[in-house]
Amino acid sequence: MKTRTNPPKLVTIAIILAAFAFLTGTATAQGAQVQGVINARSGSTMTVQSDSGNVTVLLSDNTQVEDVSGLFHARKKQMGVTALVPGLAVQVKGTYNSQNQLVADAVKFNGKSLQTATDIQAGVTPVEQQAQQQQQQITQQQAQIQQQQAQLQQEQKVQEEHAEEIAANKAAVAAVNKRFGELGDYNIWDEVTVYFGNGKVTVDPQYDSKLLALCQKAKTVTGYVIQVQGYASKVGSAALNQKLSQERAQNVIDILEQKGGIPLTNVLAPGAMGTSQQVASDATTEGQAENRRVVVRVLQNKGIAGT
Image 1: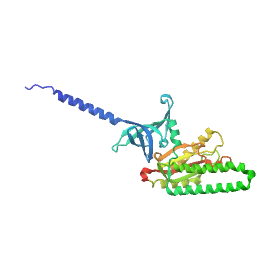
Image 2: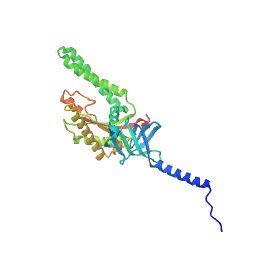
Image 3: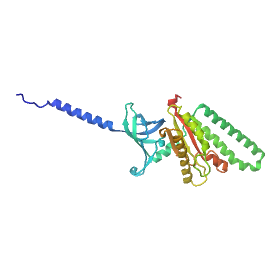
Image 4: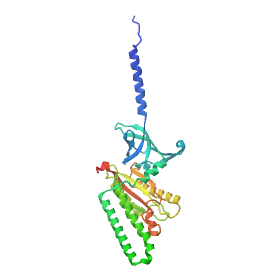
């Protein structure tokens, strides 16, 4: 009768190492975490620039987005994926798929970082046709300034009254020129401006056809994202105007999603721009009406466009 012998020590060590490797691999597959700054959004994906390089992050309707603020991140606010805009510092948790994309389970950021990202969002480049349209507008504004200057020469008594208006128009022209000089990472493929009545947030039905046409055009653009920014005139308190601009932007987003079939993963919407970037003087009712608006743009990352 043969007696059973114990496994050699080398076999035992090999079994232990294999078990450890299995457990380590399982732990690695369970989750990953990346910190960095969003430097691009394309469709339902975004690119995060981390210390180790760019990471492609895949977003979904199940991705939890939180604004964490205060000491030890004590205050948390659930946000939508629309808040994930280029320039925003984020922390992403998820798992990598077979394409080496980080499938995001949770994305966290600080509200101050969102405000900073919102402030730099003007860095988009229009396509050639829209650039020509903007240039025509600049030419028209310059012609208006020349007419006003001629009137000033003829009407010396009202020079001070016209000076402020002329300065505002010059500033508007300079602002447009400055904006085009700072454009960077995106092309604008389409743009619609929706105007609102004083104190109103409901979208007038007359804009439905324009917004739906924008949605259809967006779907023909590879890797498109839609930027939605709401504004208000300076009539009323700053808090009220901030609230109005937010609700106006959100109501436009609802139309894009519910009627236009645009997934929220393809929307960039800090939304509430308040009374920033006024396009007309609030000293007149006409100017106030121009400032009560929501601007909707179809954007494409220049890397995808090949420009």
